[in-house]
Image (cartoon, rainbow, N blue to C red; front, side, top):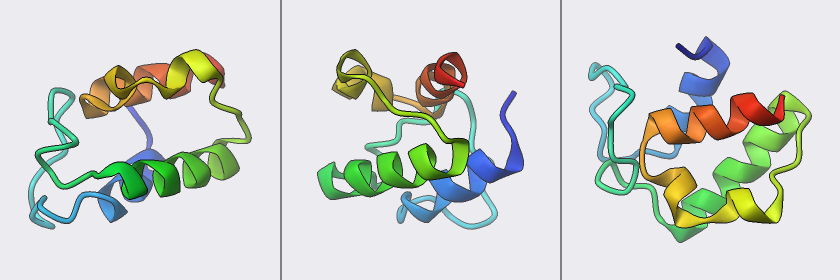
Length: 78
């Protein structure tokens, strides 16, 4: 599904997700603690790690609904 780097970066921004809980494709990122500041930080880290730029259309809240939607968007950019 996704690589360890993505999961590691994502996990850093999900304060409500227990360390031993698996990140599922349908995990609600907002329910796991991702907030607006976290989105900005997460975008910055993902862009640097994967050497991509999120385009304006990818900056919609829908992109951050779940781990799966975020990974799909990122994978399409790579």
